[in-house]
Each structure stands twice: as structure tokens, then as C-alpha cells.
Image 1 (tube, rainbow, N blue to C red):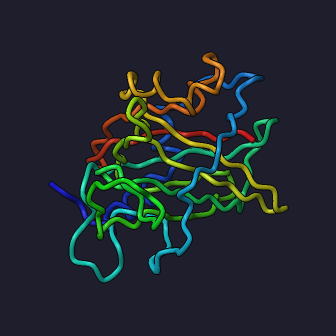
Image 2: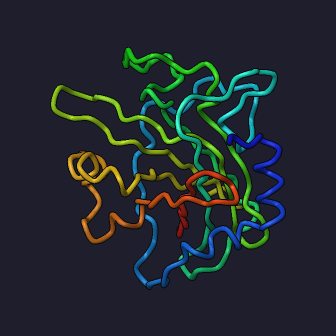
Length: 214
């Protein structure tokens, strides 16, 4: 059964983001700073009118975005593992077919008019954030290179510093291993930008944890 956008947000508020992330928490190491990655060519030139942290539904549209609805949530932390509050987080990604809502995207896959494509939120006093989105599709770059499903993240700290990275999915192991951008990160650090989607019965969707340490 599909639950509404309002119900998803209500359940998150009721449980609290820390509760939802509890089962994903792992030990923090001294060398676990999130690797920076390229911004890529498809950061929006024109931002959607509906600007929020739910990319699956555009205001006044009757239909939801195509594809699997997922939650991505976590904390933004300093290198000393202190929460960063009031940081602005932007995400942008391809729709379920693997195409960006961007005029320079050469992909001929169909675009989803009901997918927001870009969204933003701010961290709370403990550095927590959350997005509802869809699992993006992969897409071809060259004849022998297909990018795995991924989500771009841009974090703007209150003092103005920016941090950019990308998030990948553990279940896309083969494409991840062949990706020329992900493989620029040392192999022993790649887990820091890879999330495992786990079913959350309360939200009736899979949830991925992504802590960003900058």
C-alpha cells in the first residue's frame, strides 16, 4: 500500500530521524571523512518551482514520480564528529530511467515529468537531515562505461564552505566496480559513499543511511 507524502512526513516527525537511523549506525573511525567527488555537468540551470526534500511529488501534480521510493537520511558532522546545524543540503539525480532534467543531458531515455530531480533541506540542531526520493537509474556515458545509480550531494555550511560528493548503492556492485568516478576513491574508503537500502516497515519503503563527515 502506498502512503501519502503527508503521512511519510508525519511518521518521520513522530519517530524522529535519530530513531530511524539507529539501526544503521556503525562505529566511527578517525579516518572516516567523506571523500569529495566531482559536481558533474548536470547541476540544475533552472531550479524547479517546488523546492523541498520530497522529490517524489511535485506540488499540484496528480501523479507521483516513477520508480522505487526511498528515504536517504543521516547526519552532517565535522571532522571531530560534532554535528553541523543549519547546513544546507542539496541533492540532484537522474530519474528512474537514468535521465536528468537538464537540457545538456544527451541521454535519450524518457524523462519523468513528475520527478522533481533536485531538492534541498537544512540540518537540525543535531545535524540530521532526510530526503524522500526515488532510486535513480544508471545511464551510459560511453559505449563501454555506464554510470551506476547515484545521487549528488552539495553541502553548504553556515560559514559558506561548500562540500560536494556522490552517494552510491551497495546492491549495484558490478556497476560500482566499473565506474570511473567512484574508482578514483581509494578502495578502502569507497564504503564511505555507498549505502545499503534496508526496508523500513513503518515507512513502507527502503531507507539508506548516509552520514557526511567534512
